Length: 140
Ligand SMILES: Nc1nc2c(c(=O)[nH]1)N=C([C@H](O)[C@@H](O)CO)CN2
Image (tube, rainbow, N blue to C red; front, side, top):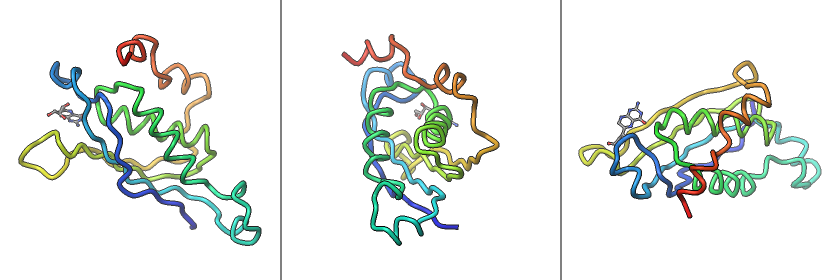
């Protein structure tokens, strides 16, 4: 299986369950593997046929940077759903690390694998994981 990967994508955002975590931005680091047939792009040199990792990074920076998840589990699921819905990714493995959350640890977080069977219906995806107006307002 071919893949496109992104290592150590680092984004600052509000994340966490404690009051103090709602007041500051923290780093989250994403390691991402996405199944993609790379042959069509290789044969044509056409970026439109590739899974454009720059486009994925830009979209995740915007989505995560302007959201305010409580749990890393929720963030990971939301990112997985976004990639399946917006980039047509059929399988992915995602690790979300909070490097600064536990002083005694290099990092803590979750790793998930998702595929077509896990994809939510479009309306459920939009209702569940689009940033809520109050979250967006709190960033201003
Ligand atoms: N499984 C999880 N455990 C914890 C989370 C989490 O998102 N998933 N979050 C916290 C706090 O926000 C922590 O990062 C701050 O120290 C604790 N446990």
